[in-house]
Image (cartoon, rainbow, N blue to C red; front, top):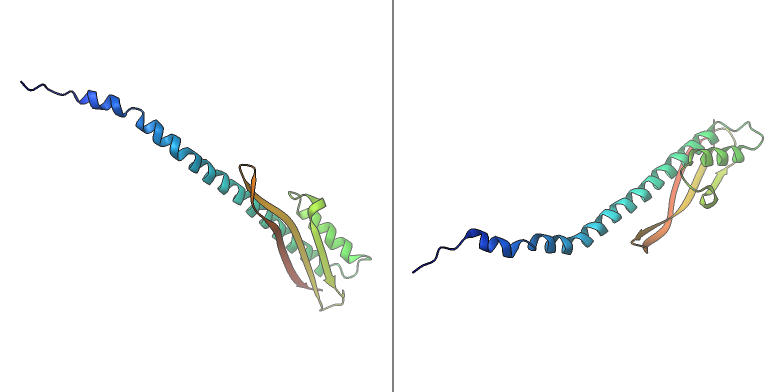
Length: 134
């Protein structure tokens, strides 16, 4: 005589399958999430650096008549880069400060991308802008 098989009989065998698959995929998802977060932090640093260099370039364009225009530009860059560590911010200003000449402001800032405590990539972010002295 044939016995009728219950569909619940097979369901009980597969209850742990979802948990096992999730446990296998979780480290990869966590690594991906932390990578996206680290990339976002570095991108934010780059945007802040670029914006501060532009502000410094604009300051340099209108600071020709100041006693120390280079210091004014450096102060503006540091003030605009409030989210960055000022001790690690490298700023250079190049100009003759003559009307119609160029003022070039360049800044560098170190970055590192670390995943789970391991540094995957590191280097320096660099931003530069050139403005005409008014």
